[in-house]
Structures are given as structure tokens and as C-alpha cells.
Length: 196
Image 1 (tube, rainbow, N blue to C red):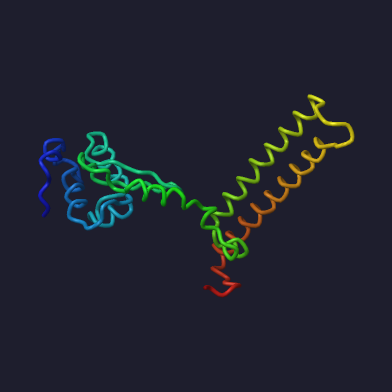
Image 2 (cartoon, rainbow, N blue to C red):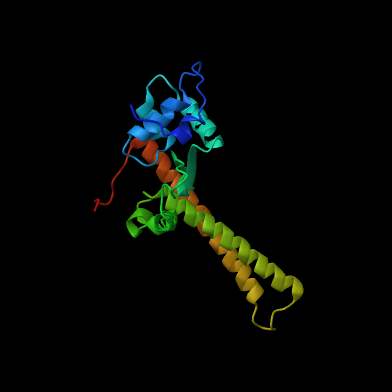
């Protein structure tokens, strides 16, 4: 059993009526060699008769009293760690930059795109296509309403046409990704291309 530092010991609630105490959560985090945990990882270490919701509730209580802090990263991953007052836990500024730079589009490879295996990257690409379509619609609308077009260039019509084309490609890509995901869920991975 790990010794709880005094700054934590004086803050935590000793309510023994809970199936999981704040003290047990802190001890589990301190005993582990890991500096930070997701709720799933912490739940697996605590005990099987406690639900994830109970673990989440204790973490929220510990966060309210500044014993535990959290960092949220792309793809909705939240990591919890002991909020040591004397350190910048759990990640250095360089580490934060590296984690934040690793977005779904950064990870999307040609193979992941062609096989629809990186669904987060494809959905991010589709969302970017939708947003760019909206920008092109707006620019085309502004040029049309303001009459700012130079005669003979028809740039507002080109912007509207490009926006429709991009919107159609984005919708087709989204439908293809959803179809492939449905097929994989129903029939398993087809592995059309060899893995590298």
C-alpha cells in the first residue's frame, strides 16, 4: 500500500459508505508505474465489482478538490493524473505539442484512405470538405450579391460549381465510409490489401 502524501490526505473524504473511496482511487494511482490513466484503465486496476460510472464519480470528486487533474486530447480521450502542486504533470509542453499535432488527418495514410481503415481520418476529411463547401458557397454568394465580379470572369459561378462538386464528393466519401464500416461490422475485416 502506497503512502498518501499529506497534501492529499488532508483533502480527501473518508466516506466509507461508498463502494469505492477517494482514498482507494488515489492509492491505486500512486501505486502504479503509470503517470496518468483513462477511466477504462483505472477501472481495470481497481476492482471488478465497481462500475466505470463509480470510478468517474470519484475522479470528478477528486478533481473538484484539486487532487486529480485531467487533460483532454483529440478523439475525446481524457487522461487523469495526480495534480502534484510542484510539477507540470503529466506532459511537458513538448509532449503536449506532440500529442496535439497527432490529429486524425496527420495519421491518415494513403493505405488507410484507400482501405477505409482509418475512419477518424476519413470523417475529419469529410468534415473539412463540408466546411470548405460552406466557405465556397458564401464567397460565391457575396460575389453574386455585391456584383463584384469583373465582367466576363464568372468567378461567382465557378465558386458555386466548385462548392457543389466538393459537397457531392464529401457526401459520397461519407456514404462510402459508413458502408465499409457497416460491412466490417457485419462480416469482419476483408483485408483487401496486405498489411505493412
